[in-house]
Image 1 (cartoon, rainbow, N blue to C red):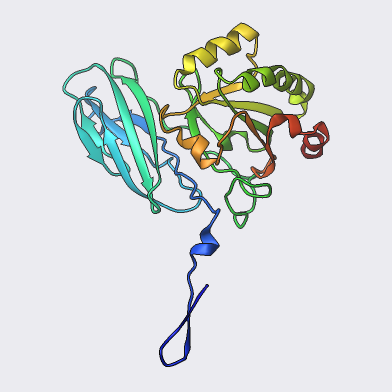
Image 2: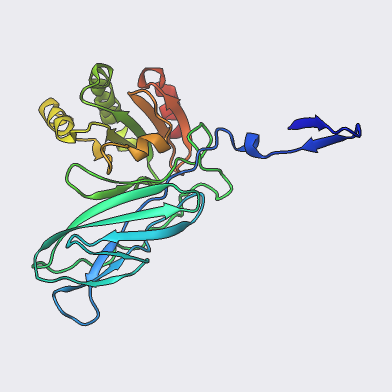
Length: 273
């Protein structure tokens, strides 16, 4: 609040809500879409459905499409007719009411049968809606949808009902690589009790991270990568400035630890299993 005195001697209180918003970062939306046969039945005709996209702390206001054949579109469920039966890379960009965006890409082969919508996800284990989204202990972890190293889209909400140890790391970070044996030890000790290790590679060349994990025998992690390898929007949404950085997320999606993995006590993990 700022006080200013007028020439008449009266004090005018100028209030601003900006201070109340400090530290409450806007959670980026999550883009996701299904690919369905077009209504006319032609193999060139495709219906795109982005209704599975979401924004945990606001609303999505724009859906922008690059269909992969040099044309663009907009809207939640556009239908597009391709010039030929080929393979195309489709890009969806969603933007929320606070200006944050998320990008997802998917390659479709019109020679193959088009997919059907994913089954509806249940949220019976989710945290109460009045728990705010944030990156601090006690907040709901921001939702994300990221490609795995096998190019399957994985959401954080896929693991509701499990305890998630989320680690941001890079194969070019010595401390990150040194932490991998500890991550593996935690996985082996607690996976039967519901602990899932999710790693998000911040490499600009994520295939090096993939090779390092395979060579080290770390095949039990859920290994993800940023959609945009330059801006790293998920790392930014989580407020991660230094790696490695770990988050322990309970079965309802609430953060119970944030910081360097070496400070995460096994007693803390035990408490939420």
